[in-house]
Image (cartoon, rainbow, N blue to C red):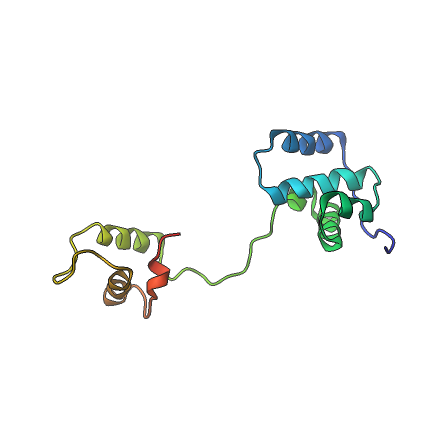
Length: 138
């Protein structure tokens, strides 16, 4: 392994916060793994030992160290926002689609289908095109 470029040094408060986070166990797995990385890295454990103990990649350790040194412990624990396409509908338009689904189905249909709802969005002019898969609830 190459020499460690980013050395994570933690204050007593930061160590206490990370240990508390791990003790509670109510946070996501990625956040807990990053907390373990930072705690072990701060004690001087080699990256190869951390990799073996936590079954993670060298890149994950490097990224956690880098973000801890550059942006702080909190930034190192959380994921950065992921890029993605902006939603086609606003919250108000989404609420309107839900309200439409709660109304009686159009003539000739027993119930609202995803395709009917998507067509309704286009007919109302909320979007130029709209896939029925986009209407599907998560």
